[in-house]
Image (cartoon, rainbow, N blue to C red; front, side, top):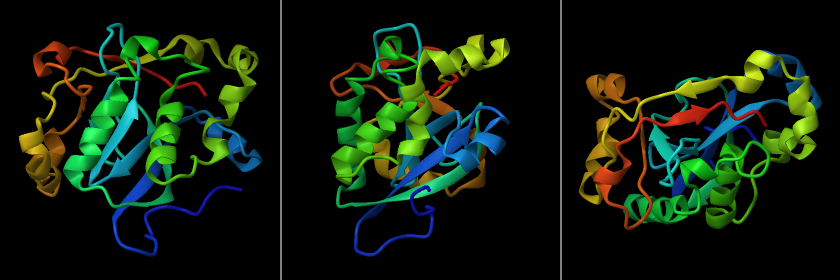
Length: 213
C-alpha cells in the first residue's frame, strides 16, 4: 500500500531524502490499514527535518526540527524517497526559496497544508511525489473534517520559535551539532526564513496547526 519504508537507504550516491510521517490522532491506528489517516509530514535531508505550519504573519511558515521529533505529533514511520546531489548549503538555499511560497498565513487545511509542502519538495528534488496515502484525506475535504471530534477540529499546537534561524554560516556546524547530546536536548524548532528575508523579521511564536488531512 505504502512506499518502501525509509531509513534503510537506497542505491547510488547523494544525500538521503526521507519523508517522516506523524499521527495526529489515535484514530490512525485503525484508518492506516485502510490507506487513510490524519497525518503530519516533514522532509528529512542532511540531518534536519523541514515542515510547514500555520501562524498569523505573512512570513515563512517553514520550520526545521530534529528528525522524527516534531513537537506536538506522534512519529509513525519514514518513507524513503530517494537521494539528492545537492550539498547541505544548496539544499538549504532551495528550501529557503521554496519557503517564499509557504507563508504561515497562507496555510489551508485542504489546499495548502504540511503534506502539500513535503510533496512539493519531493517532486522538485526526487522527481516523484510523496505517497498518496499521506495526504489522501485532504482530497476528501471538509466532509471528513465534520466527522472529526470537535476537540480535534478546533485545537492547535503552539510552539514558540525559541531558537533563532540558522544563517548560512551556521549550516555545516548546525548539522554536525545534532550529534551532541546537549545540543540535541536544546533543539526544539524554529522558523526558516524565505530567501532574502531579514532574520530579525521572523522571530515570532508560530501557532503550528494540527494538520487535519
